[in-house]
Length: 149
Image 1 (cartoon, rainbow, N blue to C red):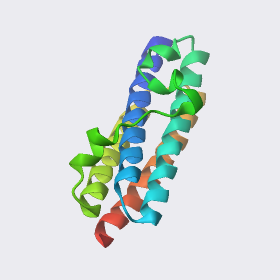
Image 2: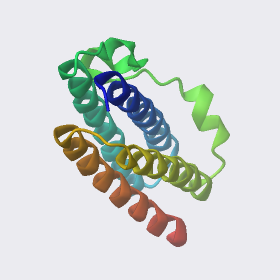
Image 3: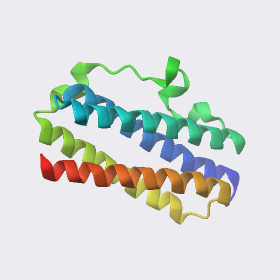
């Protein structure tokens, strides 16, 4: 697999993480339960870290990490401004917020599984696999929340 193919896969994962970061941040802003808010904020920050790591790999492989479409590259402190009126108005209640997070995380699990099927270089595969394990853990935790809601 050539570097351009690897970079393309990593670009896709950056977008996956960006979407997850946005969903978790929105969920944290829209939920009343302080424990859930804390957990969603942790997951949101985790995705910011994943984006940074993936962009580092893209850069190391000779790609332009700024072309991934991730807004975190240009925003201070790796934060994304989040207008409350766009996403949180779609959430009706705690169960709906958790369901949205579960749906997003299920997509992330699938995206990472597809990436891991590719013949990635071992150092890149290590980063992707480690992130996948954390995303899978988050997904499992959200499924537990969904059952409790």
